[in-house]
Length: 265
Image 1 (tube, rainbow, N blue to C red):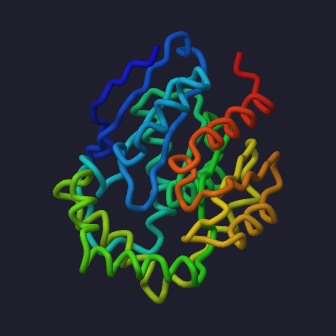
Image 2 (cartoon, rainbow, N blue to C red):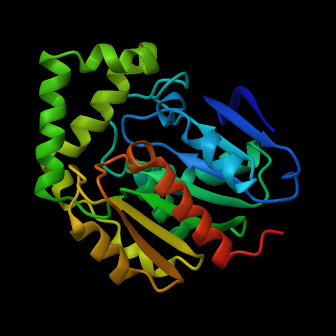
């Protein structure tokens, strides 16, 4: 049985909304820690964290980063190294506050990029594995093109109203903090490949075959940079969110990877 326990944690003077997913019998096992995408929050994971935790028999922890969902707002504009700052300055304190002693990071899109930076730069001994879904390690034209299209949809269509259901008063903070950064001309040179050789834990890299925000350049760059035990899974008939579009395939791939490379019993 899985029990959902919503709440808040404080990182310094910043309040972050969070959700504990407690699975019976998993108290002594690692926790799955979910890091959302650039427009995400707890609710926008839908039922994926619950289903993954239940399938794997592991408890989970989900939180909305500052500026998203029900967490505190963040000043705009965001710095161009906001993902680096999140990875280096926030994840370990989150694990502290959530009392997590052993973690498997599950990061989607920006959350996947943050996971890779954290794993390569911090080497927190509590981190035992990383799974990324549609992570970026460099910028590319397809990414910018799709983010420009999102800007048009936010300004002229109903994207703002759709996102407001999840982010509330943070909606403009969440959107522009993401969109303005990725479209900043200076962000074209953003790159995190330098962190990949420092990752020493098993790492699963996943991407939808039809990802509209990134080509296989992302996968190839990650594969080239990693020196740890790693596996790549391309999810067929999926775009940028294979954990929602092809959830069963995604969950099975994560479970297989973790079962093969970590002794959790």
